[in-house]
Image (cartoon, rainbow, N blue to C red):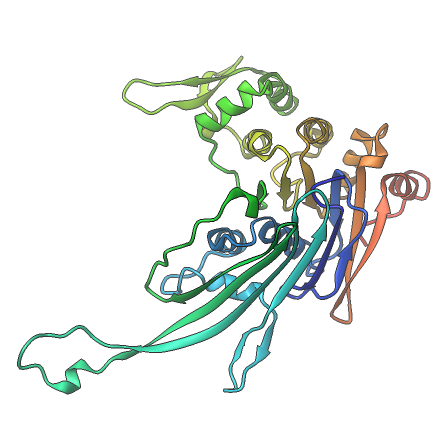
Length: 361
C-alpha cells in the first residue's frame, strides 16, 4: 500500500470527477497543455495538508505570486471552481478531494466565499467632524477547510481580510502528511542543515554519483564556514577547486535539491512539475534511476508531470527491470472535460519500444 492508492478530484480548479486509480510508486502525468497536470499536483499537495491554510497559500504561490496590492490569500481563490453569485459577481464555490491509501486522510472539502465589511477609520481626537470618521469598505474571504480521517472529521475556518495577517491555528501532525512540491524552472535554495540530514541518512555518496552524472569533475560535497560568513554548501571541483553550490548551473542545483528533499519526505509524497526542467537529456537516465531507487528505500511516492518524450523514455530505461513501479496517466481535456487514461509500466514499454507511439499525444 502506498501513501495514495487512489485519488478522486470532484472539484478543484478546472478538474471535476477525475479519478486516478491504482497509483504506483512513480506516477507520471502526461498530456497537452491545459489538461490539468499541474492542478493534480496542487490537489495532492493540499490533500496531504488539509487544515494548514499556510500550505494552501504556499501551493498557490508556486503557480503565481500575488501582485503588489493583492491580499496574501489571492491565489487560493482560484483553487475553487467559480460560479455566479446572487449579487451578479463571480465567487469561489466548494471543492472536494478524496483518496485511499496508507494516509489516514480520506476526504478534504473546502469552501471559499468573498466577504466585505465597513471598517471605521481611527478617531482623530476631539473636534473631528463625523464625516471624517466614515469607514471604508474592506474586502476579504471566508474560508472553511474540512477533512474526514480515520479518527473522524475535523475542520477550521478563517475570515481573511486584505492588509491583515491572520492568526493561523496550529494542528497536530496527525492532520497532515509529509509533502513537497517542486515547480518547474525553479531551483530551491538548499540550507546546510538539510544537506546534513541527507548525509546523516547515508545519501551523500548517492548525491555525489548523481551530480557526477551531470559533471564528472565533481569530487566532493562539503559544508564550509568562510571567514565572516554563514555555513554554506561547497562543491570540490577538479578544474575549479572549491565552489559554492549556488554558483553552479541550474541542472546540478536542481538535481541536488531533489536529492536533499527526499529525506524529510520519508513515508510521504514528492511532487515535481516538469521533472525534466533544467536538466540535459543525457542526465535524465541517471537522475531517474537514482530517484526511483531512493524513493523505494525511503518509501516516498513520486508524482511528476512532463512534456518530454525523452523523459518518459529515460524513466522506462531506468526502471526496465521494475516496470511494475511505473504508472503513466495521460490527460486530455475533451470538450472542456478532463479525461484520463492509465498506462502501466509494461504497456508503456510496449507502446514505446514495439509500436513507437508518442504517449504524450
